[in-house]
Amino acid sequence: KIADVKETYAEISDKLNNMPNNNVSCIVPLTHQSLQGDLGLAKWMLEFQTQRNNGKPIGGVVLGGHEHVKIHECVPAGDNYKQSVQVVKSGMNAQRAAIVDLQFQNNTLENVNVTFEEFQ
Image (cartoon, rainbow, N blue to C red):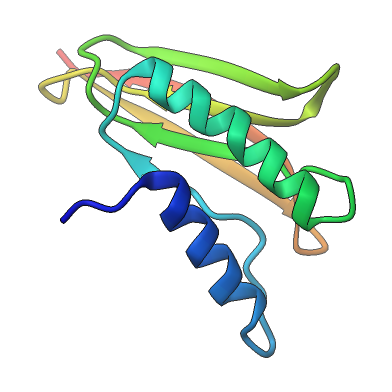
């Protein structure tokens, strides 16, 4: 059985929050659903993070498959693009790689940089 991605995200988050000495700053979902599904997940992640983190979303990234084209979309937390979730899909047939650089400061996600490298 394939579990629902939102339920899995929430379950993993709860498990991590109950671990002593938890140093996990963000969860990065790897999906194979439509762009609309990943954009919905990104929006839901921000809402979930806001509820669980005293009103402040963390942001992050969703690494997805399914579409056969390069996609890089940003889902902001309201007007705040710093705490956004970026949806990244590199396309098909290993035509390119997505290089995703998560930058942390004091165990807090500060920035997500995404670049693509084409192979041909």
